[in-house]
Image 1 (tube, rainbow, N blue to C red):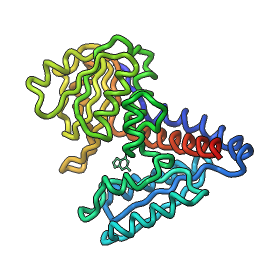
Image 2: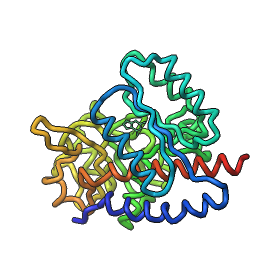
Image 3: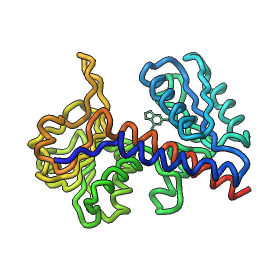
Image 4: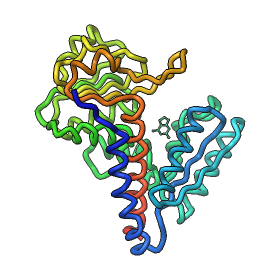
Length: 284
Ligand code: GUN
């Protein structure tokens, strides 16, 4: 069994990007900027937002974080987004999810200019992804593909099973695997005999959000296993959707939690910010 270290792969990719920023600055007169909006005080969200801003600065981009109180109205948030859409110095806008219950997430995502939508969540980007057109690809699915490709195991012709059907991970990662010519099955919480389905998978992506749900007996020997889950257990332990202990001896390649998909998501956010910057600069 081989461990797919998202941490190490991220470090390499971030170094490459850091080397690229000075030439972008020289060419276009400024550095790419990522602006992150956080509404409320969810501790997990606060930690993610800090990591995103820190990563941006570490590779030589500029980053701004706008922190708004929990009781911020939907109208106020939409007004801020409209302002950032118009701001020429802002290349990427990310609104950290989840938002407080009184704010309609769909409305907020719709309001972000699709050209600055570094998350790839805007309906224009989602449509373009499914139509096979140029778009901004969501960070976590993009990171999963990079991790699978880093193993050297080819995707074309393989059976891929994605467990989970969210808009953020399950659905887009299935489309990306399809684009790489895998035969793709999307399984979920209502799939009958899930183990029988996952045992067929040469490539298994677990993105259900249920701690330790995928056990070793559900993994095909030698499979590539990507664990997207980040779950906090009652004892404080951070675990994935895959039971690493029982799955690792069976898998050919497996990503750990932490140190797997998490850092790759942030690395792909950096890539998307550079993409948004270059696209806007070239279209000026
Ligand atoms: N919350 C959990 N994952 C994500 C993500 O990828 N982007 C944003 N904006 N919020 C999230």
